[in-house]
Image 1 (cartoon, rainbow, N blue to C red):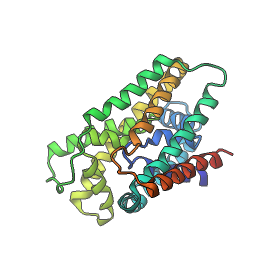
Image 2 (image 1 turned 135 degrees about the vertical axis):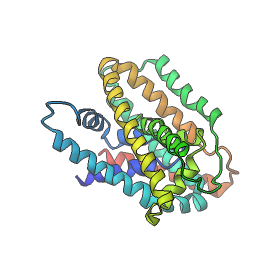
Image 3 (image 1 turned 90 degrees about the vertical axis):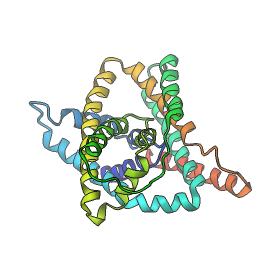
Image 4 (image 1 turned 90 degrees about the horizontal axis):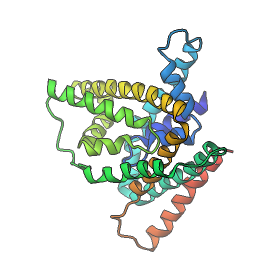
Length: 273
């Protein structure tokens, strides 16, 4: 139960960092298959483990909320003071989890290179469409805003369940990342203009997660090697997405970034002992 909660916290933190995939963190924590099964089986008739599935998902969800809300401001501080080092820490996490993922899932088969390349190209090319619009204040509540937030929530939620795909990157592409992040950071104010959009976006996220989980479960069941190879490409591409190319590197930044990368890499190894 404690490990499940911690896993949820890690997933939540990952989902508020552009380029970092919550799905990858699910793989990292060894939670991916169980999450897919629990989500897709929750409303299935004759499911004798419905209560256990609900408790598991509730624990992960609470952890994710704690990760998102509790660490939003912490991450803001880290990105203000140690932006490059923070990104390299997550690069270490991703690289280490990718190695473990490949060793575990392809122990009896080979990666389909074509599907891996397709996954890689999709993520890298998405950067061309990124709309990194800065926060310019909260918009007025309207039916248009509610519909947009619901649709963006569904797409973002779906991306959260796919390893290698960053929900925050999807928000950047739609130009809603900074708006959502500010909504989340102010959620404890319980202001109506904050709570209503967050609620609508959250509903969209849940719908997206449920639909994508069922789809991913079927794909892994019917096209296991192709699907896993595609996921490898997605995760590998996320490393490229996270690299802070715009940083002006000096000796301190290089050395501290290498150290951060190493800490992230070793952290995954320790978790999977």
